[in-house]
Structure formats: C-alpha cells, structure tokens
Figure 1 (tube, rainbow, N blue to C red):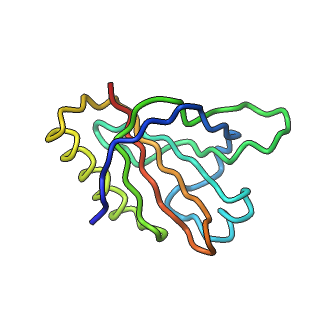
Figure 2 (spheres, helix red, strand yellow):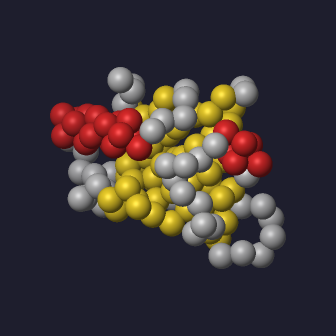
Length: 128
C-alpha cells in the first residue's frame, strides 16, 4: 500500500514526446537509457490507462511536454509496478483526495525514475 501525500511542484519538469513507448512494458534498461526518467499522462476519469509517452527532455529541439508545476496528490513505490498495481495506487490517491477535501483534475501522470539502481514508480494527480 502506497503512502499518499500532497506535493507542490514549483517548476515544471520538461520531457520530449515519444508516442512509441508503452507505459506498461517499461524495462529498467529503458528508464536508465532515458536519462533516468519517463513520464506518461492519462485521463483520470474514467481511468484510461492508455496514453502518449514522454521521455526526459534531452536538450534537442523536439515537441516538449512537461509535468506541470502545481499541486498534486502523490504516491510512489520503489519498484516497477504492473498495470493493476498502478490502477490500485490511483484508486488509493482518489480515496485520499476524497478524505482530504482535494478536488482532483482529470489528468494522472505516471513517472518512472531510475534511482539508486532501482526503478521508482510515481503517480501525480493534480488537484485544485
């Protein structure tokens, strides 16, 4: 069970669009080769775990996207999670938000990090 918390991101994190990535077939080597991060964005309601992928911005001229600055309900696990576990973590965030009075927006960001030799799976659900 993930520990859900509120998080405020003060600056956006830039990524490069890559529609060829599959968010549920990500290997540790893919995250490591993408400079240690991958970002995916989903429609939150209904939870549609289909999306466009975003690779970490590499300094070249590409269509840039970002994890926007703002307020989020946030959870993470220090492992590469399967699709069902990601959906369960998203449900935990919704329960936390309901109990904490957060009005969630209709986006959900899935971020993979390669940190200390391990994959970290993070979910960011923006709120007002």
